[in-house]
Image 1 (cartoon, rainbow, N blue to C red):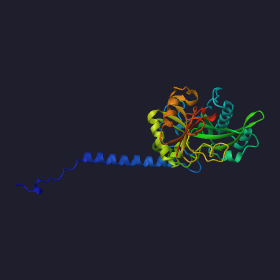
Image 2: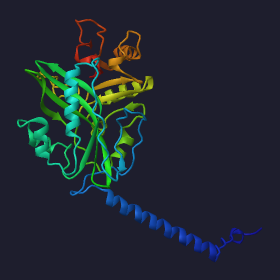
Image 3: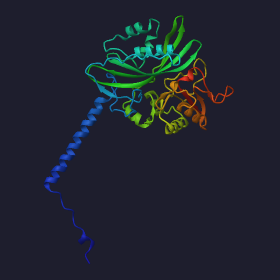
Image 4: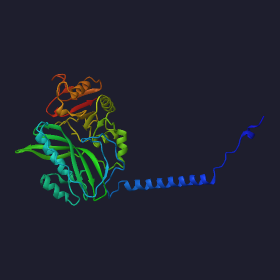
Length: 351
């Protein structure tokens, strides 16, 4: 019987040619890793550059896609997108048109523009220029292009209005890579003698400049069935949103795809023109402006898909309030309600 030691044979050594190939592959991998490390360093934000995302973020295809922070390279600045014209069938079309025009003006400019002079010419001498100049919409020395995606009413009372404008802003300089970010702006208006007038910008949808890699944020907070602004994704990643609300949102996505305008950021802090803190501010509410491929404002028939979603939410045990084009439980209860503001979206809250 042969011993175990006798049965053990040393492994044969690779040939000189094979060893050469292995050495080459290891060296090549080191070079690739070094190059990637160097490129990440170049792409990281610095105090002297406009921050950009370093990877393209997967998103739902379509003209109203809001889940995007992407890179693009332009030889020259692209022409501005056409100004959105609000149809007369929309909720408060005159207020929405002014808010859209303000958002469009704030996000379309050239690298050579003098921003204080530009804002004065656009909005008048009495606007709060320092606040607008500090807003993350303004990047001196860079061109900007804004594309309005959808304006939703945020409040309407006492001759004052809030319009939440979802807008995609692309910023670049010369032929360098440009970045694109989607924000929800809370544009405040006041009714004057000749109609609606711009009052102030209450929110620019949050700061994005502190994120080195927003694509990672999308990967964590993104559900491909839910279209939402980056403002809302950042709310989720910052831990501002109730787990109960996120669970209801995920369950709703099992029923249908849908589009979000706002969670916390971008929505009025208080219930409009009151001293009550909004459920949105507390991370317990979401506004939905599209069910499937239909805007809520265009899908208000009694047998519509939007009405089916409202019925489903009303029956959900975690849902505490549903605002929509319908009042399902009558004026004595506030669990379901409707008014002039909630014709173009579904307001869903928990807690």
